Length: 211
Image (cartoon, rainbow, N blue to C red; front, side, top):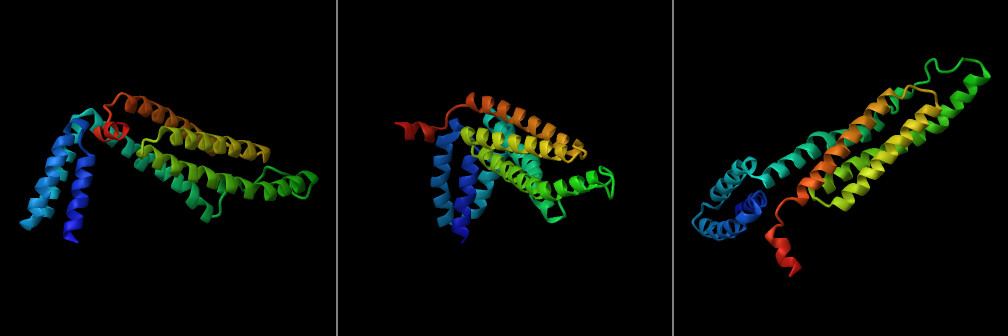
């Protein structure tokens, strides 16, 4: 178990390195096997991981990796999780009928019927929005920009659909508009990250696979 954990930690350490440090990563793997034979593999692997993390803010590839993880785990995942979890807490809370219709009137009856019919649809679209957010975070960490673009398009389409449906119910769309504004900010940051990633050196592994 300790041997497997040591190798996993060293793999994480090598993933945090610059492309130009690929040779150093290979050398560390060889040194790890010697450390494992001497009984100090776990300590050696942790030391390599700390060294790799300490160097990340000092080079462009490390700053890029830290940025996408902060965006994905600090913003996109929480927002997507909120969309999904809110379905278990009486969603959509912002769509309470309130005073948007006159009670005991034809207008009240029609609006209540529309509310009952559209609320499940809004909940489904919100679930799609939450799932697309989580997918966006996953593909962003993988730097698969084609899938990132697809997930972003689905998120934006779902958010706009929610605004339209809420508008049909004559309810307050302020919360939904704020969510769309945040989504547009996310997508603008993602687009900037895609341009940044294109300027980074290509990893040696990718060079070898292409030959």
